Amino acid sequence: MEPSAQWKRLPSWLLTQTAGHAHRLVTDGFAAANARGYHYRLLATLEEFGPASQAALGRRSDIHLSDMVATINDLVEEKLVKRAPDPADRRRNIVSLTAAGKRRLRKLEKQLAQAQDELLAPLSEDERAQLTGLLSRLLEHHDPR
Amino acid sequence: MEPSAQWKRLPSWLLTQTAGHAHRLVTDGFAAANARGYHYRLLATLEEFGPASQAALGRRSDIHLSDMVATINDLVEEKLVKRAPDPADRRRNIVSLTAAGKRRLRKLEKQLAQAQDELLAPLSEDERAQLTGLLSRLLEHHDPR
DNA sequence: CTCATATCAGGCTTACTGACATCT
DNA sequence: CAGATGTCAGTAGGCCTGATATGA
Image 1 (cartoon, protein in one colour):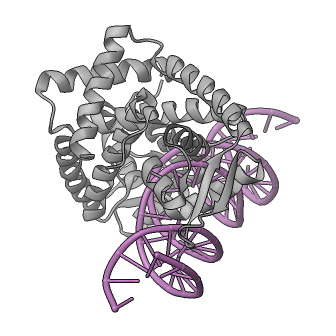
Image 2: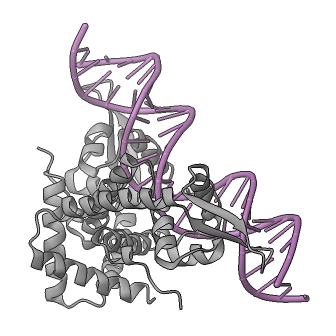
Image 3: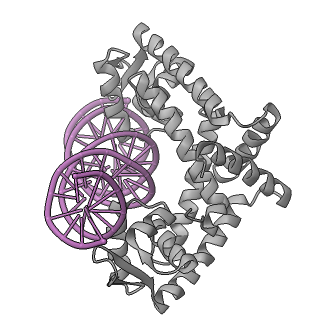
């Protein structure tokens, strides 16, 4: 019965609200596989680009250096990644993916794909492409690489 | 030089990232007028639907009851709203907009409109309509009124 | 000297959860 | 009694700031 306010038609509202639902879907999927967003991003980045120092990983996965420490701690504790000193540069830790980490990643990817489907359920293939196209252009504009 | 990961093409990522930018634009605009999102939503809801109890306001503005208290405290302190006991129901406080509150709301609306423009800058009118249309359908599906 | 790296401690915002006393 | 209302305390996730120690 509560009518809805005018500001609920604003692009910024529509965007943040749908993003909220997207985030919830993804997060719930990850939680079902015992992980959070940072964990997935780190594992996926490791597989795609290989072992790297924490600083490099942070840049590639868009995770703050300060948050990398705790994230890696979590993953090390579950033996999903290894952290080893870099013999060539004693400041660095080289982080690498374990076999268990790869298996976990497969699970997370499954959850993630499912979340995309639920998220876009009401849209046709063409519409999905339209949406991602428009969003990509916005992102490109506000976040030039 | 850092290449970008595959998951950065996922709809959920595009959505949450653009939403992040939208949120930043809006938040910065509000901050320039000494307010935050909750403050605007409350003021706008009050103007659109008139004085109401905190619980009713919470439903209309999608703000949790627990957060309403602090939000209204802030606004009362700046004399942008008034909080008065409801003579008809002693559980309730009736919150209403002051003249200063209306002036502040005008400022916030200006900032908000500007933020929409910056957000959608790279899109044509047609594309903006496309985007809001698609987002509205997603929202409708995930959040049926 | 500077810069990069890793760590630690903490804040901020939005959303939400639970407990509680009060009143209808 | 159930149910609504207002208040308070606290959590969680993602993002971020700053200070510090170490080494290149």
